[in-house]
Amino acid sequence: MELSSLSFSDHESIPERYAFGKIDAQSHVALADNFNPQFSWDDVPAGTQSFALICHDPDVPSSPDDVNQEGREVPADLPRVDFFHWVLVDLAADLREIEEGSFSNGITPRGKGGPLAPMDSRQGINSYSSWFANDHDMSGDYFGYDGPCPPWNDALVHRYVFTLYALDVHSLNLQGSFTGEDALRAMQGHVLGKASLTGTYTLNPTLAPKQIGATSA
Image 1 (cartoon, rainbow, N blue to C red):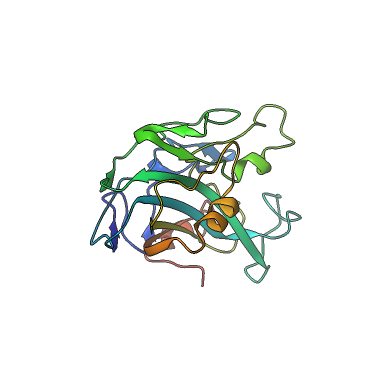
Image 2 (cartoon, helix red, strand yellow):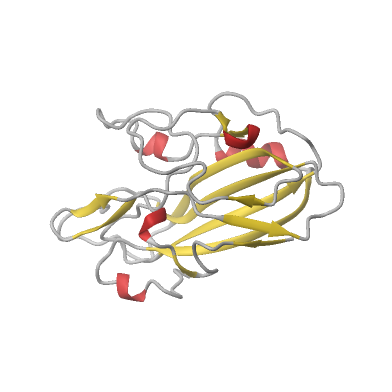
C-alpha cells in the first residue's frame, strides 16, 4: 500500500497552512490556518474492510521545564514522547482520498466536536486535549485534526508521521473520547497493511531555513 499527498512531500517541510501555529516575530507563535492535508492511497490489501489514519509527533519534549521559556532552549538530547495530532478511524473500504480541509479548516477554541466525523468516519481526541487541560480559554476535548505547533525554542525540527492502516474489520467500535493509544490497541491483530508519510516542522527561527528535507534523528 502506498500513501501520497499533494500537500507536502515525504521527509520535507509541512507548509504552515496545515499547522496549528506559525512563527511570529513579536510573540514567537501565532495561530495558523490548521487545514488538514490532502492524502490519497492505492495498492490496498485484499480483504480490507476499513481504514484508520493516525498522525503523531514522536519528538515532543518529555519535560516541560524549558518549553517556550525566554532565554532557554529545549535541548536536542532531552528524551522525547509521542503527541497525537489526528486519530481517524472507520474510514470506508472504498475510500481512496481525503481532500484538503475536509476534516479541519481552522482552529476551534476548546476543540472540534466528535467522535462523529465526515465520510461516516469517527475521530478520537488529539493530544491538545491534555496540553490545554489547565488553560482557561482553550481547555476542552480536541477531536479530529489539529496540526503542528512545536516549542518555539526547541533544538529539534519535529517530525509528523501520518500512517494509514488497512484493517480487516468494518469498525474498531471505539466510542466517546478515545485516544491514539486506544485506537492502536484496538487495531492489534486487524492490520492488513500500512503506509506512512513523514513531514517536518519547526517554530524555531534559527532552524526554520533548514526545515526542508530536515529530520530530527
